[in-house]
Length: 127
Image (cartoon, rainbow, N blue to C red; front, side, top):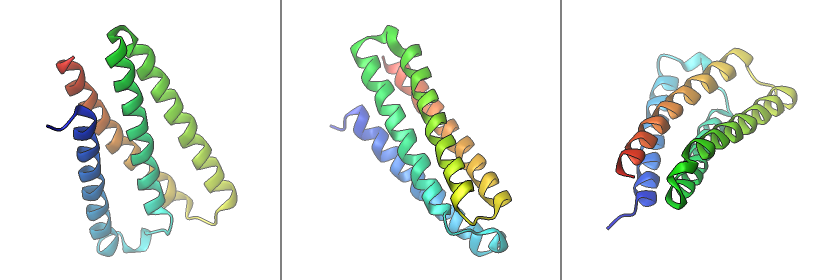
């Protein structure tokens, strides 16, 4: 039997592969002029940070359901700090296409945030 943590890891892995496949298809056709080299790093970073944040919230909730709000807010804050540091470092040291970089990051952030909220709601229904 697969644990809830294992299920989440499978779901986010599959979701990330779908995001990458759709992105590659779009960048190979319609958005060819907008592709930039660090795109895959963005996907991996956001997927990893989302996974870590979700696992921390799940661990806190398993110990005490009352800690959900605190754990979730701490997770969101930690993610935003990591994302801000990544954006600042990338913008300061990289020779990137600013518009493509920021728009892609925002789209990925929204897509993964929606995914995480749906998964957290499913997780909380079972608790």
